[in-house]
Amino acid sequence: MGMETPEVRVTSVAGIADDPIAAAARALAAGDPLGALNRVALRDDARGLALRGIAMAQLGDLDRARVLLRSAARAFGSGDVVARARCVVAEAEIAIAARDLGWSPTALGAACATLEQEGDRANAAHARQLEARRLLLMGRVDAAERALANLDAGSLPVALQAIHYLVRAGIAMRRLRARDARSALALAARAARGAGIPMLAAEVSSVSRMLDAPAARLIAHGAARPLRLDEVEATLATGALVVDACRNLVACAGTDVRLASRPVLFALARTLGEAWPAGASRATLLANAVGAREVDESHRARLRVEIGRLRAALAPLADVTATTDGFLLVPRDARAVVVLARPEEERHAAVLALLADGEAWSSSAIALALGASQRSVQRALDVLAREEKVQSFGRGRARRWTAPSVPGFATAMLLPAPLAIV
Image 1: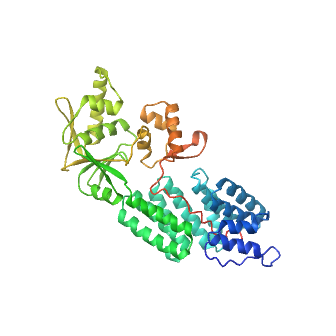
Image 2: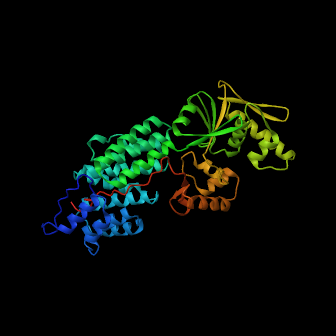
Image 3: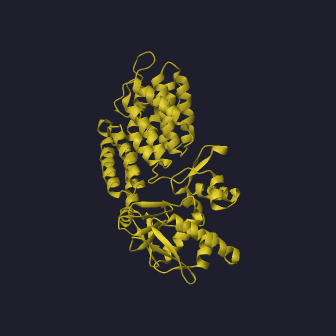
């Protein structure tokens, strides 16, 4: 599955050049899946199946593409280990495009080892980049960066360079490093132009537009305004106490207090942050944190307990003091308190807020954290999944849910044309 060159030298089993296969491979390398299908649509040999699978993937029929590539791997047989490994890498890329994160990375790792051992370094590098993309989608940013650590982007074919820098941009965006993200995207754009593949150039442009789109809303002194990613980064660097409702944490001067698994405490912190420099009433705090519309003594007792827990959690950054009718957030070192919220919020915001920490959650764990029934949480997840705001991997009891990673780009489906042929 090498992207290394569109000049593919292909031989048949008999050792004679197989012109339709070679022409189909060149068409795929140039981003012309229909042209490739015109040449191999009726072929059921291993090479024909592999190229048909790649063409169907580029056309967006991922289920059919997966079936064809599995058939190709079987048709190649145990003797052609390189071709079989390339089919595994192709199937892994399809899984990423379909956001099927439940596939085993063990098979991809074994395929990568085989390709390296057999000297197919370009496809081995492609396999490592796919693993980095899978880790990024799962919110494991540090692990994704480690997966790229030993890859020299300059030694890769230009198409793989573009994908490499797209992953680098995704890592930078998750870490709120807008300048690093822009630099990586500039390199990705240059590599995409060099590759001459329209789908890849469009992918880079799509991610680049995200840097100019609103990434959050700044709420302060009763007013709200949208912020781009670089403005979010600048806000976090001002020294203000930031109640971050995008990631469910409270931050100041490099110190974070993470409250993603404690939604009641975070709701209290956000309500106090939005009210600052004034305090928030007990009725408002109870309504926002526990949904209490008619307050009785049991609610007031619970509020005292939760405020005590919040005070302990925020001790490094702020105090929570009592006022005549409620409580006031008092930062220790910061001169201001601001709230960062999602650009748009909705009725399932509590579920999205839990998933914003980048970790993989089971529906039962979400229900426990929110104090809701598992059935209601599952309904919310189903709605959010249809809207492509959350994604799942695994099945049954092993199923886990995550929020799409920034930048959440889909694969360009540049399954390298020579994949199962050379």
